[in-house]
Amino acid sequence: MKEELLSEVVKVEMELTRNLETENIRAQEMLDSLRQDSERAISEEEKRLQEALDQSLTASVIQAEKRASEILEKADATASRLERISDDVLKEIIRRQITRILP
Image (cartoon, rainbow, N blue to C red; front, side, top):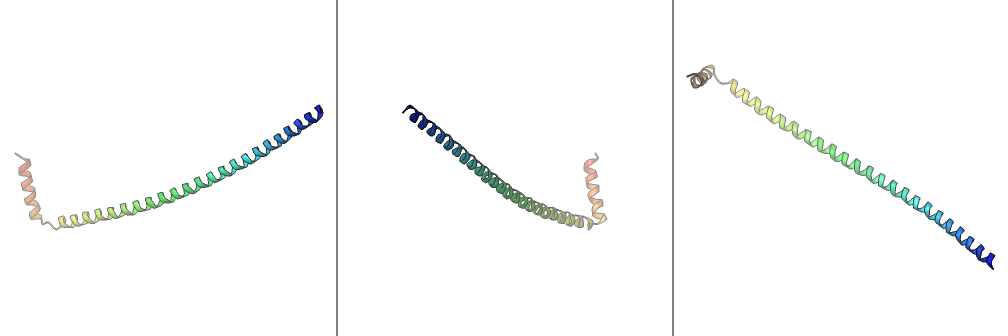
């Protein structure tokens, strides 16, 4: 009877050990799966963010080029207008400014 009880205890311990090993394997597999899912999600998010950044940069460059073009057009128009001022008008402007500068 003692031997039967001892034998039964050993069987239960062995079964518990196998169950524990099985659960450890399952837990490791779940962790591996979760790690892969997380890495995949991170990779997809990085890709999405990079695409958004690229689009934003492209839009910013286009906007900056448009603004620069507008500034150049205004500068050209101002330069053309100033080039058309006659020498007599310029001389008169200079005379007025000199009288303001000199006592």
